[in-house]
Length: 116
Image 1: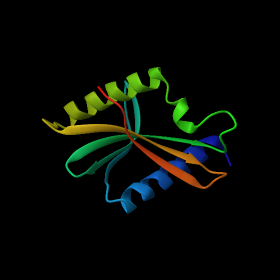
Image 2 (image 1 turned 30 degrees about the vertical axis):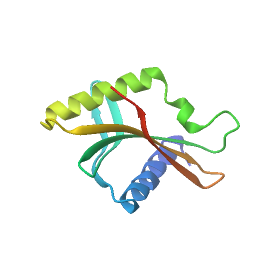
Image 3 (image 1 turned 180 degrees about the vertical axis):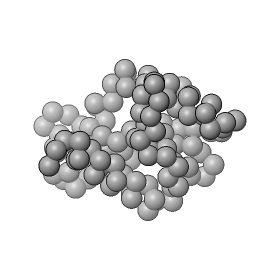
Image 4 (image 1 turned 180 degrees about the horizontal axis):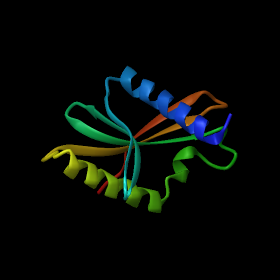
């Protein structure tokens, strides 16, 4: 299995997880010149921007540790663009990370990991 296919598969796992927990998926792999956001969802009138990270195991750290400051800046810029393009005004937003450790069959949903 190619690395890209694995990433896509884990994004589907994350989408299913979010749907099972009451989230409505609005966008998947939203791209613009600033970057990409894996999943954009809505729950309880909060717009959630989700980064999905997966690793086979934690031998080299948890998946969340691979969300770098550079990646955070790109996610924030992309989220701002999304809000302008879709004309969202005065909406509460949150930035989450879903980490998947597939040897352990573990999904961790980390809410509000960083703020603007």
